[in-house]
Image (cartoon, rainbow, N blue to C red; front, side, top):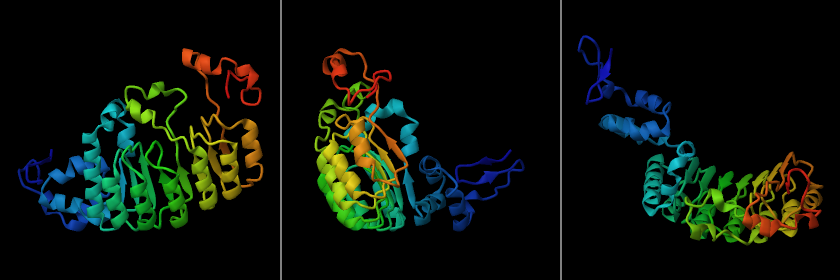
Length: 313
């Protein structure tokens, strides 16, 4: 059976080397483009100098997607909120931006900061997809730079990024006119028990309150939006109406957990959206805990908001 020695060379049963380290650059790129991001970072870069060189080729770095790695390791999530982890993610993203030579088109990552995103804004004019969920140190500063530096942006996910305000949405709406997918979901502030012990309490308490300001920015400056997610947003019926009036081509709308809008509000606001195919209403189960019993103990008084289906809103 063949084996790989310390120089990246394959040895057969006869002991002769087949020279993996001597593969042409084109062959190496063909191999690397078939591997996962994790395999490239943890394996092929360590084989030898020629493999390391090929691993930094711009053609290998049109996509930087760590989302599957985050999803596969939920038990490590408390460590993700530390400064040390953020620095590691920033370093990875900055390296990929350097190696991509402007060809980076898709970024899906969590827990990066303004440090790396500012470089993205400077060096990634062809970026089309940006997903940066759960980034406590991403602010309006880097988002405004991205609006100018990444004009081809089509999909943006800024969920759980609480230092990003409606100001970013205003500038993005004016300058990034190709965005058709926007995800601005918040954490479950009604029942934060799933986040306690993982997400810092101070961050949970910093949940954005200006849902209508964000809705106004979307409705007034992002008419091209087709897919919009606003889970647990604090927008009201007024904000929802502004979105419906401005985003006439909306096809998908997720309002899960939006406590300040009722089924009637949603029906009234979306009645004129002829392209709308899917609406997720703010239906969720209210646990019988002391907190929720105190807050929702008189739920029968709110006929417009509450339905009888297992205490669902």
